[in-house]
Image 1 (cartoon, one colour):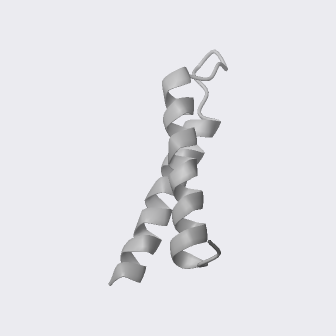
Image 2 (tube, rainbow, N blue to C red; image 1 turned 45 degrees about the horizontal axis):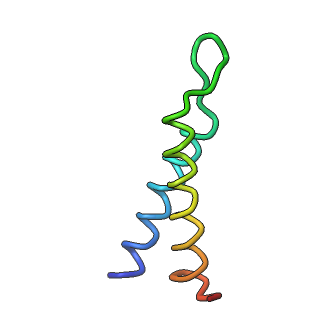
Length: 57
């Protein structure tokens, strides 16, 4: 059950990170808040992927 939760968490944080980092408004500028939360989601994505799924650390 924990492995399923890890994969769902990876999927959700990956989508949030992708949206937050690649988002641009109509004028082509990035929004600071979305970029910030995208980077935070990416950190959680990498941590769960390396530690819980790949068991690297």
